[in-house]
Image (cartoon, rainbow, N blue to C red; front, side, top):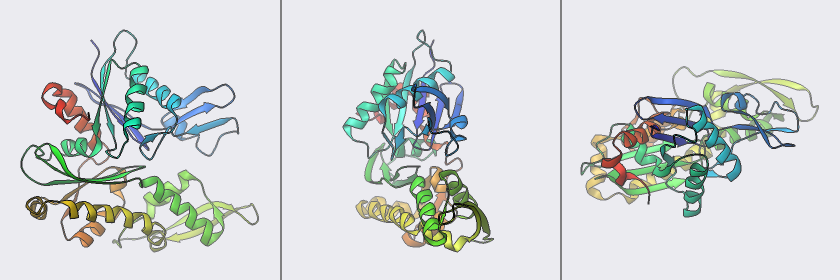
Length: 331
C-alpha cells in the first residue's frame, strides 16, 4: 500500500515526510538540465553544487520563485523525481499534502496540485505554510487563544494569527532569504566593485549576517571577481556592513509583523503578550532577527526548535491524522 506523503515545496528547500517514517528527504529545490536536450542531469544537493559552476549548455534552475511555480514542466519533473526517490511508482500512488504560501493565487494552487497529480500522486491537497508551521511547532491552535507564527522562507515571508483552528489575521510579503542574498550581492558590487555568486552571498549571510547587533561579531574575508580588471580579488566585510546591506529587506519583514498585529482583535492581541510570537523557517535563523522583532513589537519572540522542519512536520501530522485534520486543507 502507498504511504501518504507530506511535501514542503519550498523556494529554497524541499522536504518530504512519509506517514509512519517521519522526514525521509531534505534537498535544495534545484534541478540541473541540459538545455540542448532538456534532459535532467541532477536534482537536490548535487544540482545545488552546480549553481554558477556549469558550462553554458547546463543550467541549474530553481523551478519555484517567490513560492510560486515559474516553470510548470520542470516543477512536475522535480516532484516526479522526489516521489521516485521515496519509493513511489505507478503501482503505489500515494495521497499527498503539499505546503504552499498563503499568498498563493487560485491559478498557482491549480498548478501545484496538477503538477503533483501528473507526477504520480493519487490525490493532492494543499495546506497553508503558517498553519502547518503552527501545528509542527506544537501550538494550541484548536483553542480560543491567539497564536502568532512568523514564517520566513526563501521567497516569501508570512505572518499569521491563528485561533480555533483558523487564520484570524494574515500578512504575506513576497520577500525572503533569497532577497537578502541578492541585496548582499548588490552591496558588494556597489561598494567594492566586486561580483560574487549566489552561493557566496548565502555563505556571507550565514557567517556574519545579522538583523540586530549581537555578541561576538566577526569580519569575513570574501573572494570575488573585480568588475574593472576582471581579476579575482579578496575584501574583508564587517557584520555592521552586512546589517546595513540587508536592512531594507529585514524592515519589510518587521513591517509585515506589525501590520498583522494591527489586524488582531484586542482579545487575541493581549494573548500574545503571554504566548509570544513564534519564528519559523530557514530565514528565521538569521542572527538577531528575534531580537529585532522583540524590540520593535515589545512582544516576546521565540525561535522554534526545528525552524527548517517545522512546516513539513505540521503537514506530516495532518497526514497521520488525515480524517480528523482534513479541515485544515485549503479549498
